[in-house]
Length: 97
Image 1 (cartoon, rainbow, N blue to C red):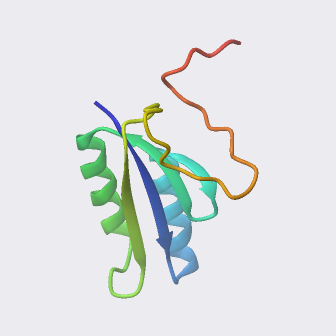
Image 2 (tube, helix red, strand yellow):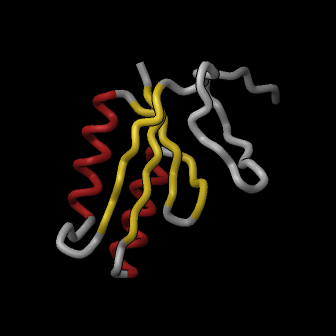
Protein backbone atom coordinates (compact mmCIF):
# COMPACT_ATOMS: atom_id res chain seq x y z
CA UNK A 1 0.00 0.00 0.00
CA UNK A 2 1.31 3.42 -0.95
CA UNK A 3 1.43 6.54 1.16
CA UNK A 4 1.76 10.10 -0.16
CA UNK A 5 4.79 12.03 1.07
CA UNK A 6 5.92 15.61 0.70
CA UNK A 7 9.69 15.71 0.08
CA UNK A 8 11.39 19.07 0.68
CA UNK A 9 15.09 19.84 0.65
CA UNK A 10 17.61 22.66 0.91
CA UNK A 11 21.02 21.76 -0.49
CA UNK A 12 23.91 24.21 -0.31
CA UNK A 13 26.14 22.89 -3.10
CA UNK A 14 25.04 23.12 -6.75
CA UNK A 15 26.43 19.67 -7.68
CA UNK A 16 24.69 17.99 -4.74
CA UNK A 17 21.54 20.00 -5.50
CA UNK A 18 21.37 18.60 -9.05
CA UNK A 19 22.00 15.05 -7.81
CA UNK A 20 19.33 15.46 -5.12
CA UNK A 21 16.84 16.69 -7.72
CA UNK A 22 17.59 13.65 -9.90
CA UNK A 23 16.91 11.33 -6.97
CA UNK A 24 13.67 13.15 -6.12
CA UNK A 25 12.49 13.08 -9.76
CA UNK A 26 12.93 9.30 -9.75
CA UNK A 27 10.47 8.97 -6.86
CA UNK A 28 7.92 11.77 -7.25
CA UNK A 29 6.40 14.76 -9.01
CA UNK A 30 7.90 18.22 -8.75
CA UNK A 31 5.62 20.79 -7.10
CA UNK A 32 8.22 23.55 -6.66
CA UNK A 33 11.97 23.68 -7.25
CA UNK A 34 12.86 21.65 -4.16
CA UNK A 35 9.45 20.23 -3.24
CA UNK A 36 8.07 16.92 -4.51
CA UNK A 37 4.96 14.82 -3.93
CA UNK A 38 5.80 11.12 -3.83
CA UNK A 39 3.46 8.12 -3.63
CA UNK A 40 5.65 5.42 -2.08
CA UNK A 41 5.56 1.98 -0.51
CA UNK A 42 7.58 1.34 2.66
CA UNK A 43 10.32 -0.26 0.57
CA UNK A 44 10.44 2.76 -1.75
CA UNK A 45 10.68 5.11 1.26
CA UNK A 46 13.67 3.16 2.53
CA UNK A 47 15.33 3.28 -0.92
CA UNK A 48 14.63 7.03 -1.26
CA UNK A 49 16.17 7.70 2.14
CA UNK A 50 19.20 5.58 1.25
CA UNK A 51 19.61 7.31 -2.13
CA UNK A 52 19.34 10.77 -0.55
CA UNK A 53 21.86 9.94 2.19
CA UNK A 54 24.37 8.98 -0.53
CA UNK A 55 24.02 12.45 -2.11
CA UNK A 56 23.43 14.85 0.79
CA UNK A 57 26.01 16.28 3.13
CA UNK A 58 23.94 15.89 6.30
CA UNK A 59 26.15 18.38 8.15
CA UNK A 60 24.96 21.31 6.00
CA UNK A 61 22.07 20.12 3.78
CA UNK A 62 18.50 19.58 4.94
CA UNK A 63 15.83 17.18 3.69
CA UNK A 64 12.37 16.49 5.09
CA UNK A 65 9.87 13.74 4.25
CA UNK A 66 6.31 14.44 5.49
CA UNK A 67 3.70 11.65 5.61
CA UNK A 68 0.45 12.97 4.04
CA UNK A 69 -1.50 9.71 4.31
CA UNK A 70 -2.98 7.51 1.59
CA UNK A 71 -3.03 9.02 -1.92
CA UNK A 72 -6.52 9.75 -3.19
CA UNK A 73 -7.98 9.79 0.34
CA UNK A 74 -10.59 12.53 0.12
CA UNK A 75 -11.83 12.06 3.71
CA UNK A 76 -9.58 14.87 4.84
CA UNK A 77 -7.90 17.62 2.92
CA UNK A 78 -4.14 17.30 3.38
CA UNK A 79 -2.83 19.98 1.01
CA UNK A 80 -4.23 23.49 1.07
CA UNK A 81 -3.23 25.56 -1.93
CA UNK A 82 -2.94 29.31 -1.42
CA UNK A 83 -2.49 29.85 -5.15
CA UNK A 84 -3.64 28.10 -8.31
CA UNK A 85 -3.40 24.34 -7.53
CA UNK A 86 -1.03 22.15 -9.49
CA UNK A 87 -2.77 19.47 -11.54
CA UNK A 88 -1.08 16.25 -10.45
CA UNK A 89 -1.00 12.97 -12.26
CA UNK A 90 -2.73 10.35 -10.13
CA UNK A 91 -1.54 6.85 -11.12
CA UNK A 92 -4.73 5.48 -9.54
CA UNK A 93 -6.91 7.26 -12.08
CA UNK A 94 -7.61 6.08 -15.61
CA UNK A 95 -5.59 7.81 -18.29
CA UNK A 96 -7.21 8.53 -21.67
CA UNK A 97 -4.82 8.74 -24.60
